[in-house]
Image 1: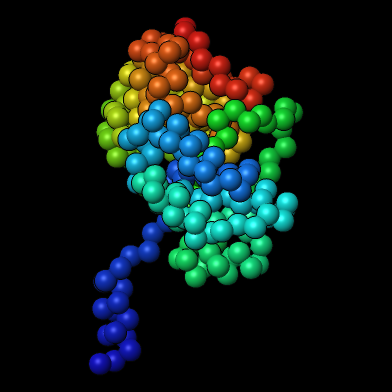
Image 2: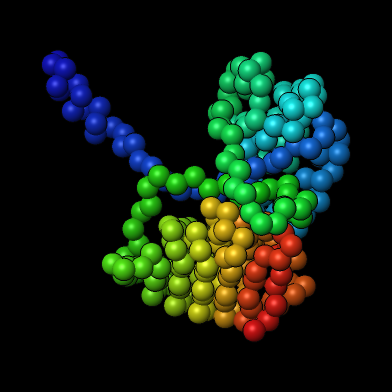
Length: 255
């Protein structure tokens, strides 16, 4: 068999594609795994469907900086016992990276620090939304202006769909279903029921805001600070709402 024929067959077996996914990062501030187990249980109770079998990144930068001894095997076991799937590690020293690779974890690069006017607080820091982008698949309900980065969606966003407005705002003129995901570097506007997840300011813009006609989301986030549905039900649930970031905490008010 010729080399050309082999390459032709190989190209028909797989297709390498970029994509965009929202990954949860667990930032470890202490090496007490019993305390970690308790905190994870509390978080999972708030939104069990959101966390079940979710891929997570383990950020151990703080512990390594403090020369804490990390039992990675036991840490992974603790995470998996909560039905979370650890897929990688960030902030590890050389020795821990080698251990992580042997354990089948990917090595993630250090998170870029975006300097803001206000310091971030500890508000809901356990899972922080981390977004990686390479290629965004097109949606047939989309129209794009040649002069503005605003992305306009005119049809309902179905479960499993992910819409990303890179470098601008996202406007949805229809309903967003459970299991759908909206992401924007700028603001998000939804002129219908907003279910699923909505993440504005994903590249760190703390001035980004979220507006919706009916707040029914599984999760909302601005610049990495987030609130889950259990918290949202205590505020403006099923009401027109405006969500902004003030003093590094999400402020949710009816409009």
